[in-house]
Length: 359
Image (tube, rainbow, N blue to C red; front, side, top):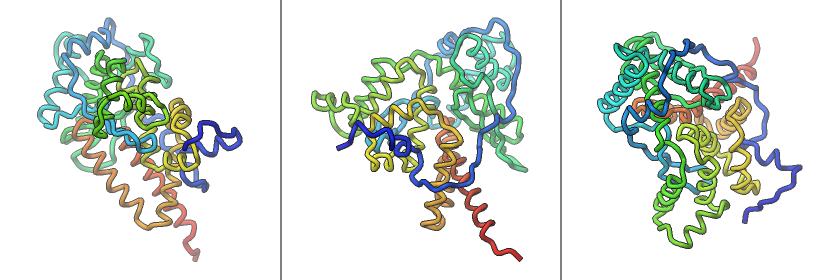
């Protein structure tokens, strides 16, 4: 049985994100912002909500499988940014429709510069009171390549990430492709259906229970209301984020997805942490370089135990990232996984260089 009360003297150690406690070289992946695009705000822009409404209903939500929180959740929660019609042509048509709608509202005619439009959208949200802790800067990152197809990722102010979803013969086209899919998701994120409401919570919990082939009857309802069960922890997360958008909730869930992938949640359970305690701690902690570095150190330890572990995980992660990018999905979980693994590769290379005999 899990304990809900632990001594303060051991609390910090037990709630560390990593499995191992070995020290490794400190690296920073995102200490400084990569070059972004900053443009002046266009006057008289419509509200984000009106844009979302006028663009029609949002695309269907793909399920987000939440395997975190001690492996107890497989919930059919609609994920922010997971626009995946299953057909590249349908995805392209949906994206172009939103871009045209944005152009109509902001310019009234002609083609819209989607890179500028995306920045304007988030600048507009900031000036209208959105809680953007790090400002409204949209950040682009090109994948190094000397020949097409070129790939570009774009990170939104809250942390959500999208990528170019088409074959892009130029770097400029790759940036525009990434901006298009990010703009579509930014606009649709303002739609009322993208907000966590009481109805949404009830539906999501029912779907989570259904994934375990059980019905929402009295006994299971009591389980769903108990934060020390897997389903209860899921409900607690949703209740704690009522009123937030899907993109905002996805950004929070990325932390728990990474903790599960890294084995950190399992390690915290073995150290007698309760689900409620873990939720309370990490619901208010942003993903930072310290957490990434400690996770990377765990993968270094695994590599030292079993050779080629990191290389195999990198290959698997790159396939996942590629599939999700081409489907137009939100990418931060996959992108963070790859960044953490590449940090581990750097640590391993540095260690190997240091142990080479000198001549």
